[in-house]
Length: 303
Image (cartoon, rainbow, N blue to C red; front, side):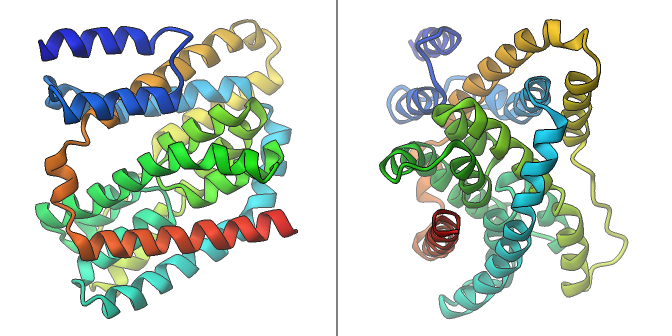
């Protein structure tokens, strides 16, 4: 029965009626009822599917518009990253959390969720349970953001550009950033994707800085290769006219890939994963997320 339900929901996610929030909700319902019958499969292919989907989205963007969006988000990015890391350190000490868990959750909130945690974890020598707690915290808040942000944006009458910028700054994972922005509009999607991927490049200096602070030597930090693929796709779409013939098809395939990705993410959020987080790490994650969301929203709307 679980395999049949999984298959039916997966097929539905490939139809025009499925959106990123709907796909995530279906995955969550599956995880909390009959359970995910393919946990190893969804865990293995979630990251890969997201990466290829992000590359595909590049075929629907113009490089000139992306550069302008990136410039607008640069100051927000720098201020929010270092502000979040500093606040995370202070709040983590106040909550009497371990240094490693505090740093993992702070990096995940400041940069790009699970990707940042996965990159920084080996640098600080994080244990499996510490990684699980940090990832669980970020994934739960990602799910909340995907549902909450579009209604807030509409209620405040935010423009497409404002909402895309807000998503890129205030939502952790690239998957939820792209999902929320796609639900708001195509212009918001372009802005959010560009700024979020530029933000993801901060994994490298932050990981190197972490190695210095935690006194780790011989640290190897991997460059998020799919960001280069996204840039390449965007350049092809802008400067190679022939690419525009297949660009819309690749963009549509990327959006379908994103919907399936969010279904896989929802299916992986079992009650066991949620319970493993614990109240204090979750409190840290919520507080950091509320602060960065509120402050960035105020700055974007008021400027």
